[in-house]
Image 1: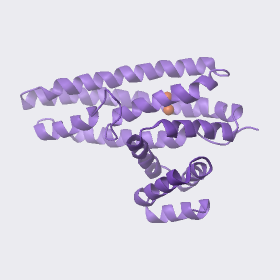
Image 2 (image 1 turned 135 degrees about the horizontal axis):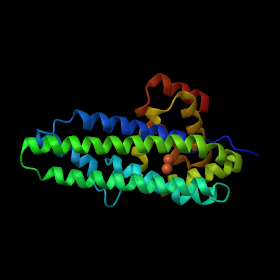
Image 3 (image 1 turned 90 degrees about the horizontal axis):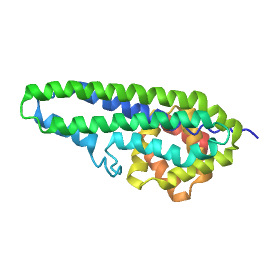
Image 4 (image 1 turned 135 degrees about the vertical axis):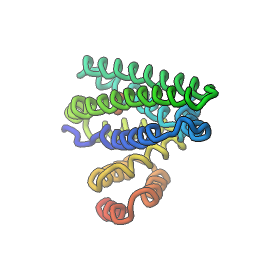
Length: 232
Ligand SMILES: [Fe+2]
Ligand SMILES: [Fe+2]
């Protein structure tokens, strides 16, 4: 039987919110102000090499692509090889853009004058805009082209097993940072489906941790409706 689970859209909503937030921060940063630049660059680059920090948005974008390639793409390649190959090529392009931003950020950090930082900051902003445009177009494509194929080809238990595998492979700090963004970004129906799937597939302590996060992150009326629908 065809599945109804949507493996991509909820997590993509969280990633879009992260991108909107970071984009807003970069374009309003006063690059003449050395301390404002340091704070921004720390968040951008923090632990990029090990891709572990919960505060690093570029890391989260990179980890998301890695999870797709490790868990979802291999079984999908059996029925959508051309699409999966093309999505992986886009991942490589996104990685190159992320690395270019990190390099630009490192260069910016060493600049001694406000004028030099302003010019380098404008360059960084353009690189970030190009990454975000490409990343959003890529996510749109996965939702339009891959999600329907996944639903046709996998049952809900099969898709939930993939989701469980991804959740289990996250370092805890990264997982909770990601889930916080997702919870804030979904509507009531999507939130209810997401919490139901966690309830069905995750151990009770993880369900409790996600529920506590929802309590803290989602506005009270919306969260109360989710609890009512899911029976939490
Ligand atoms: Fe992707
Ligand atoms: Fe994706």
